[in-house]
Amino acid sequence: MKKLVLSIALAIGSVAVFAQNEKFVATMTEQAAAIQANYEGSYMPMANKMERIAAAEAKEWTPQYWSAYCLINETFKLKEAGEKDLLLEKAEVFIEKAEMLSPNNDEIEVLKAQYAMAKLSVDPMSRWQKYGADFQTALKRAEEINPENPRVPYVMGTNIFYTPEGFGGGQAKAKPYFEKALAKFSTFKSATAYAPNWGKEASNYFLSQIK
Image (cartoon, rainbow, N blue to C red; front, side, top):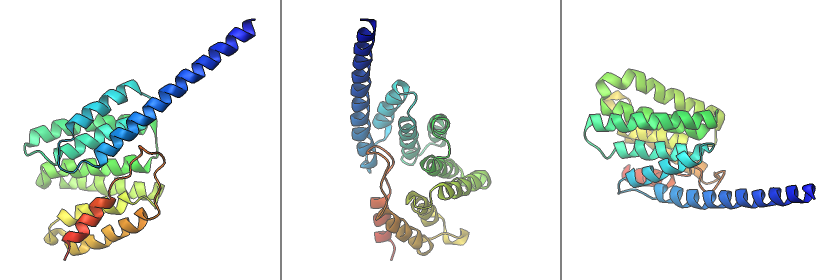
């Protein structure tokens, strides 16, 4: 009798966990798609949703990742340096949590490069030495972990695109990186429906702007 009761309890528990996992996957898939399709609007409503998911699903790295991703990208829409730094401080906490949950993760390394680029853009003259080095280190680490990640050349290309020619950047030098990114996107498959899969459309856009 005790074995029967235990078996029933385990079965009920398994169904509950499965239902919870299904809900998590469905919610994350929907939110990740919305984030990656957001080109014009604010990222803050999605950042707030992801933060709530991250709090509820403390063992999952992807909600932490997407929370940081939204905050970082929101800073590129702001003008005030103080506002940017406040969001980036918050993003850094999510990045650290994501890295604790998923060490040696190439996507998190790419995100760290984006974070460094955002920090540098707040005050390029005083921050280029530290965050320029952090940017290069993170992308190098991402490529070492996964040479086929298309976001590595895409993020590098973006950085070069916006760097003045006098400092080693420019559209012509960025072009090969976007082409390389698109070549990798042609074979890339994300681990899940809600894992990072951004950059392809933007690579095409940047290439269309290069004469």
